Length: 75
Image (cartoon, rainbow, N blue to C red; front, side, top):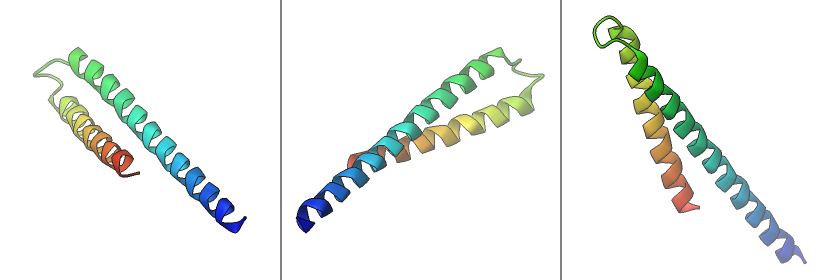
């Protein structure tokens, strides 16, 4: 009985970790999509600072996406 409960706890914790990874992936994809749309609207010369900030956001979300995918593969 104890082993059954222990196995159930492990399965539930893995399911929670998997769901958290999927939420992180969805968030990264959503933010990446919004940032790409914002980047297209900006002027190439006048809005250089905003473009840099958006590009930083894109890079950080791409990195977060890759980390979440790797973590999901190891679960």
